[in-house]
Picture 1 (cartoon, rainbow, N blue to C red):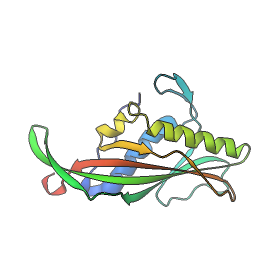
Picture 2 (cartoon, one colour; picture 1 turned 45 degrees about the vertical axis):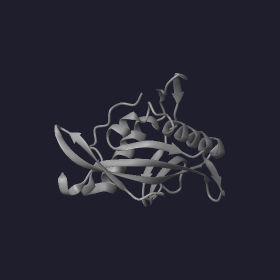
Picture 3 (spheres, rainbow, N blue to C red; picture 1 turned 180 degrees about the vertical axis):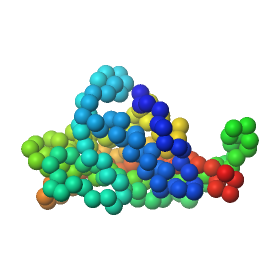
Picture 4 (cartoon, helix red, strand yellow; picture 1 turned 120 degrees about the horizontal axis):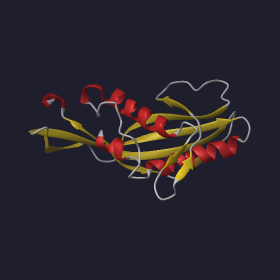
Length: 175
């Protein structure tokens, strides 16, 4: 089970920044080259990867594996709101169905195997509700990853994992 996240919850005043910080902290807990207990299968070896977000550039030349997370934006239905009791007070909360693209790339020795391993571990991790509970507690929940898709190879091997999820955060005017 993942460790609690220390970054603040999703925040309407800094929506993109707060969400990306949560993703960075969560992914860094796993993609560190170590073994992690991810449920019934026991310790699973995760690869060491470079983590990048939005339009940040991957180290060139890439010699290893990198994951770049790009927020694709709204997905499907319009945002909706609901009332919840937060800290003893009624608070209007906003919910948004959004999508993220995780671009997994590798180059160097055994690039195909390295890329496939990282993409498979990522998709499996995102689909594990127990492991993503820490994200849900901070407002990133109901994650539904796609199976990794191979993309045309150029200078490196590339796979794409798309993930749909729900953001939950207080309506800004009532924070």
